[in-house]
Length: 279
Image 1 (tube, rainbow, N blue to C red):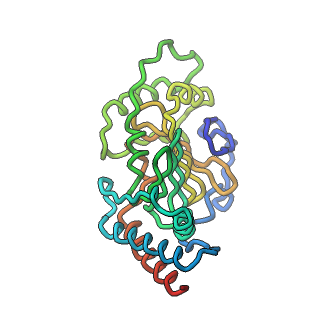
Image 2 (cartoon, helix red, strand yellow):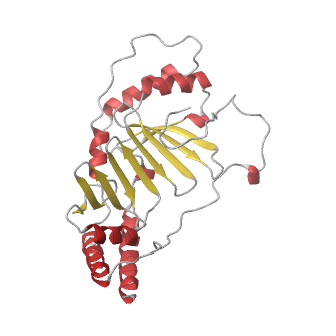
């Protein structure tokens, strides 16, 4: 249905595309697993000096986290380019991997076990960054330009796609950073497979994809239009359960909130103390 660098099980939902019989609530394909915090698993063979150096890096990161409130404009960044490779390997193990991954051409970000703390990598970039969303990737998304008007009239067999495309173009042109999200829930609208295919083709791709594994799987794809994203939720059986288009600078599901930073500060402090006692 939509191209995505992480495998997606194709499917379409919406009025007219599914059987009419009602399903009991316990048969609905809702996600069943909620992400819960688990400390990273350490399988370290580092010498004590390397281990202590990695702990010092984590303490520096914790000090940076303590300066943040979780607001979008705030950010802490530590370049890891000059770290000893053995120390950096140990730091990466200590931070672990979280539930959000972001991919662009030449630049990737992986959330660590501590929400709002990212490992950002690319050409000449190897950062440990604390923020609601990595700044370089936010800037990449913000650089999208409004495409030209469609050169040809839409096919005659479409139902609502032309009106939806006009709405998306209008909201996209007016959207500014910080504006509330404008959400078009295609799962609840009378759209045909031809409608969704047409929208997919006309909106195009913006070169940035996000996968959030917090509650089922949420897969977010930037379109070619400024501030326009496909947001798709899949349950644990890879069934598409919600399909929407959001017009916003960054969808909320991909952002770390203020309470996330508060939790991460506490958990990282406890984790550092636990690691220090293992020396």
